[in-house]
Amino acid sequence: MKLVIINGSAESGKDKFIEFIQFSTSGVVNFSTIDPVKEALRHLGWNGKKTDEDRKWMADTKKRWIQRYNGDGCVNWVENIYNENIYNAYYKLMFIHCREPEEIEKIVKRIPTAVTLLIRRPNSKVLKNGADDVVENYKYDYVIENDGDLEDLKNKAHEFMLKM
Image (tube, rainbow, N blue to C red):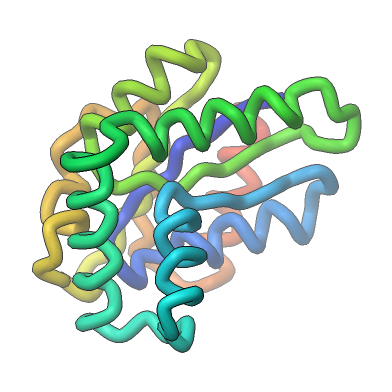
């Protein structure tokens, strides 16, 4: 199973890119390092919407969790999910959304077969929340410029899959 660490600013097309791959290829799963934070916040009453304020709340909560309580918590979580599924014959490709360059680097070091992918979109929403601010601060293995229409992004997703 191949692991792709995917990143990009809000509304850059990351989920749509993965949807195109899932539509054409079976065995593709999609997770995010923010998932454990979302789960905790749902228990505290969060409604699941991703407003700018909610995105900042999630990013701040994740940052504080990592800094104060469990420095490698999200990285350990990714490693556990990967290891639990690596021998599952159905899964061929796992996407992990991760914003923070330090975490991306730790995941790549722990799972050396991982590749990194940045999705860029001109005029995508610029959020000031700590996590989105550092999206470009990593040297990615692949960069997809989402600068066309949906058909163009679909073609780029297909081309990316051919490389995998």
